[in-house]
Image (tube, rainbow, N blue to C red; front, side, top):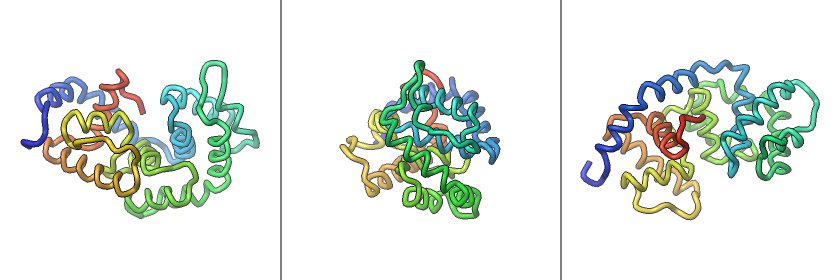
Length: 210
């Protein structure tokens, strides 16, 4: 524990938000299988885009019953009240995901471990990195303690001295090394990775977002 810092602040912040964080995690675990498609679609939209805008776009996709309707996804990625960056590339990813969703769903609900599912997603779903694949698994309550290493999380891991620097790029090797350090930190402070993830995110965003 000596290597870490600001732990009093960590515990104090968690105590204030613990109930809301745990309620949100319960909500993830209750997501219906019918909703998995749109949670995956959401995670394909989030890279370098606002989580709030991605949530707005997700609602539009659901309103148009996109999973079962033949429509072009690209216009739904930029509306007058939101914009998803790199919309052309993401429209292609979404269309490809939709085409292959049957096998994606089979893998999602299979008996594979979360780590095995993540590896499969990264290799087989265009647009999903380790971060987005873990984000998807977390949002459906199936990530089993794997970490979503976005810039908000990395900033907090540096602040609490879980890591000593933020890498310029997150290669697979870097991702897994930092994830392991995050998991060890969570074990030491007796707050789960998922709880810490939402705590760190809310510290940066001002609210508990998905």
